[in-house]
Structure formats: C-alpha cells, structure tokens
Image 1: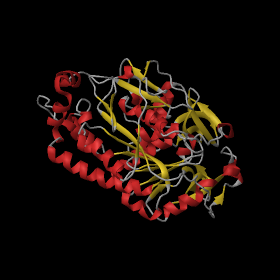
Image 2: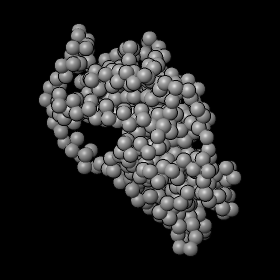
Image 3: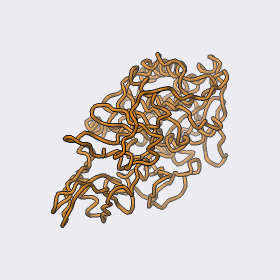
Image 4: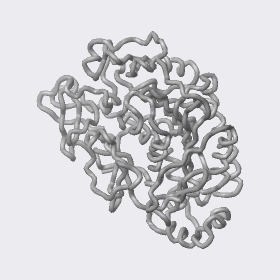
Length: 447
C-alpha cells in the first residue's frame, strides 16, 4: 500500500484530456469540467455520530455528518482522527446516505454486506446508518488493503462488524443471505482525475472494458447473495456508461426494480433514469455514480441461528456493555465480541469464507491471562468506567500515538488513554512509567 502511494506521488502528467465518452456526454460543459479538474479539490470529512469532533466547517448538504473544511489540516497530528471521531472522505461519495434512505426502513436485525470495502470510507458510513443491532460484513479481497480496512473499522467503533477477505464468488455456498449489499466496484477511475494523477496515467479504453467485465461478475455474485426483497447499492468513481448505467441495466434485466434517489435540485447532482452522477464543475466533490435497485420477491426477516459460542466471562463482562447479550468467538488467541444473535451466522461464515475478524477484537491472550485488545478501547461496546482513565494533553497524546512510553510516579494496572474525552488505547503500568500498548502498525512517524 505504501509503495502504491509512493508510486502515485512520483507520477508526472501532461495536459489533461477527457475520455471520448465523457466529452460526448457533457458536450458544451466539457470545458467547465476541465477547468474544475485543474483546481484544488475541496477538503471534507464525515463525523462519527457517536463521538465528538472539534472541526468547524460548512455542511455537505446530502450528508448529515458531512463537513467541508476551509483548509486541509494535518490530520496525522490530530488525536481525534486516530480516535475515530471522523473520517476524511470526499463529499460526492457521501451520497451513499441518500441511496440508503431510498431503500426505505431497514430491519433492526438486517445483514448488510460491503463487498469491496477497503479502505472503509463507505463502510464506516454504512456502519453509522444501519440500526445498531444489524450485522455489517465488510469484505475486501485484496490482501494489501485488508489491514487498512480493519484499522478504520475498529477505530470507528461500531459493534457487530465482521471483516472478511474473500472473492465475491466465495460467498456462493451461503445462498441468499443478505438484506442489503453495497458494491463500490473497482472502476476506471475517471472521477479521481483531479485528486489522483495516477488515475489519468493508467486510463485507457482497455481499462474501461476490463473493469466493465469485472463489474458484471461482481454484480452477479452480489445478486446471488441478496435475499428476495433486499436492496443493492451500486457505485463507482467513473463516468463511463459501460461501468455505470449499463451495469444497473443488467440488474433490471434480471428483474430488479430501480429505485430513484431523492436529491435537492440545488445540489448540482445529475439525475438520470438509472442512477445519479456527480461532476466537479457542478458540485463540491469528485466524480461519482450511484444507484439503488430492489430484488424481486417477498422480504423475510433475518432469524437468529443457533450457536455454541461461549458466553462473555465475568471478568471480560465487566469491561463491556450488555454482556448478557454478547458472546465471545475465539480466533487466533483473540476473543472477538459479537451479539449473541449473530453468532450462528458468523460461525457459518467462518466455515465458508476467509474471516479476518469475526466481531470486534476484545481480549487477547497474554501469559496465563488476558488483556484488552486495542480495538476494544475504541469500541462503543466498552464500559469506560471499568478502567482508570489517563487523560493526556496534545503533546503527550501525540507521543502516545508515536508509541512512546509515558512517565508516571506510581503507575499500576491497565489504564484507558484518552484525549479530550475520546478513548485512544491502553497503557500498562510499570511503576515510574506507563508502557505503551498502541499497536505498532498504527504508530505515527510525523512530528
């Protein structure tokens, strides 16, 4: 992942040339798009609705928690960012919120699958929109992108989240098991021409064709996993009709009902007969496409499946909210916290696909006992009053995020490290210091 970022930064590009299909679709508006693509992209974030984010800005009109910032801060040096108080996300993709609303009421115990989830922007948005009791399965087939997805989801803190790392076709043995599926498909990336110069360099007609073929297969697998009466949200960051409206049409040909997404006429979103399009010259955001369809058939509510998953024991139960309704699923010496309602389905998933985390990692083995996992510190399931709290000022919070030990007079036990009331992670007392338990892969290098 780091190598990919470095490679993209080194790319040099010539004058921007719009793809022929885009020129044809826009006509006289093409020069306006070219001008917009030469300007600096807007900076936007989406706040976590259950945490406190300090930023001030102007609202993203189609997303309740979306904000445009006047300038780009150094997010790496903001502890609130690492605490999952907000996610840095371009604004057009926040239209997922309106697509979600087009689906109508979502059952309390729905199963939602994000089939192409990394790095987690739309996944965390979906996590914020779903009912708290719903199960969210976030899947990313590309191994190099899976760690970032897990980190972002754990920091976001929503319980009842499972992360998997399988090809869409691998879910086939489960049959029709999802109430809602999000497919943010791999695409030719025209909508990212402004933000990512590498997208301009890699674009060609062959890429469009290969992406369109790949999307057909992904959608076929998604359709097979969707329950009758369920909803599928499809999105890309390109303007190619082959990758957008044509893909929606193949679902309509299978019997899907296209559901219009309500938008305000002042937003600048282009409303088509098979989806919404975003162009940077019309709104403050990047290129984007999104559509919603409903699968024919009668909706059947999700039922609980029996499971032998072990209950939360007394010690761990004191660390979490509602321990009676929770269970622990063990994997690789880590106990994952999950609603008992979902244990049977998740164990079936573990027998079918590659499950990276079957719930929120809560405890891990250490010696003859257990210690709380880093993800538990950031989880909404945590009882913060079960631990001593170590509130840090900015300078010390950044030292903690760098992995440094913290000086102390008489440090004992385990403390929950916080910044301005937001949990960050754990520290282990060792007399004259607090040993740092912030995960190595998450540690910042910037000073």
